[in-house]
Length: 267
Image (cartoon, rainbow, N blue to C red; front, side, top):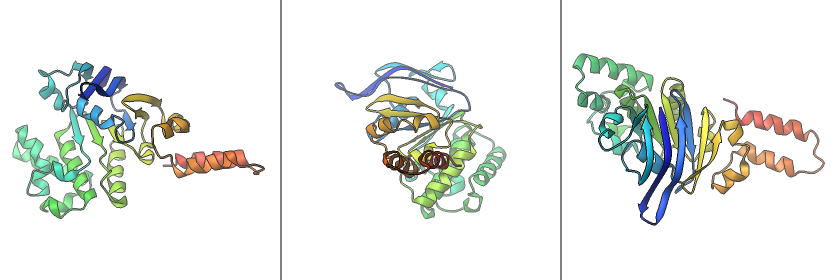
């Protein structure tokens, strides 16, 4: 669904933010792109949806090259949920906001109402359809934003730090929705939080504009030093494993490490 070849991008001529990045994402895959602030992960998301134009390299969406001529057509393939839900609201009510993309595509009113009903229920916001978005919590606002994207029915959904401005409850709510979409859509979740990457099929770690790790969560999380070099905070269970590894004369060290490793990936 997504193929990137030798991508380069700089906001200023002498300072590359994306440095010769190449990657492929398959249809239905749930990929998490991990990176600290300034790693290039959010810039990559903007390049994928055509909000920024690459200095060099190629981006293919569902087999078609992203260009100035094809960008409008290919945007129908991709939906993006940004980190600040307030920036995405355009409607007076939740119902209006979910309907926005459908109205732009000239859906019949009867079809629109069915889709609004279907996807508001999917994200647990069916009781708030007449509410003003300003009265909602951060997690509720993001769930409405996700409903609007799902109603638009893109093949690919990008979540660009979609939980970074939420409280713990909102983070849990939004991640539950994201995880429920696994296998139904091609998902690209961009975050700096390792905990949110556990459910992904694959993790790509970026540091200083480059891909430094690419593999399954169990493979990537073993590379603790590379994760630390990328300024990512490893999970508490991984920190405990480190302490146990350094401990002397500890009984059942291997068994304890195995239990902690299993707990790390416990769903």
